[in-house]
Amino acid sequence: MTVLELTNVSKSFGALQVTDDVSFSVPRGQALGIIGPNGAGKSTLFNLITGNILPDAGAITLLGRDVTRSPAMDRVRMGVGRSFQIPQPFEGLTSFENLLAAAAYGQNKREAEVADQCVAILRDTELLPKANQLAGTLSLLDRKRLELARAMATGPELLLLDEIAGGLTEGECQALVATIKGLHGRGVTIIWIEHVLHALNSVVERLLVLDFGRVIGIGEPETIMASREVREIYLGMDV
Image 1 (tube, helix red, strand yellow):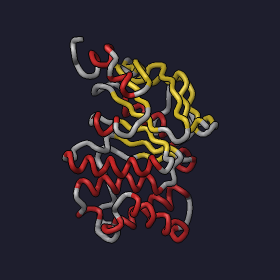
Image 2 (spheres, rainbow, N blue to C red):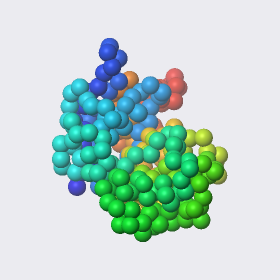
Image 3 (cartoon, one colour):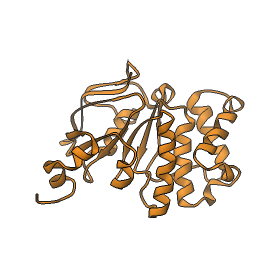
């Protein structure tokens, strides 16, 4: 089953074309990586998928339903979960309370109904020992874990990760990748924007490359990274 499909999606801000006729689909259970130079339109693409902005043209389908004009909250409750590059938890709440808020609001349920689920997510993201620690006192790695956990708490069919490995040490990055691999291994469908390529390529089955809002390649990671055009545009190499 196809979880997400974009068909000829375009978006501009004035004269600036930030997403240009983008089409791709993601089947259930797959992990798709998105790479591209700064300004390529990666974050705009995520905002189009989540409904934070609406396209000027094209169609977006989620689980077989047209959500092109649907507001962001409707898409969350239909199954789109997202982490952000800079974690912004409720710092005065504990890790567990952060998840309760995300789960209750995202799934439109009472906190008592989602409490056990939140405990399981804390365990899956290796945050259970920090369940009662205030989010504002967590290390960067654990704040990244909490950002991932909050996205999972909404009960997503599709998990969007936005440069979640950024700013981590190599050891911290490996630890977080192991957590993401575990979630993906349990069947979570993922789209992951990332500049840390070795982390990305250790998880995803396909890579999509954006440049000036256009898709210039999509396929298996080894094939994409061997492409002359990708190496010239993304890696800045004169091949």
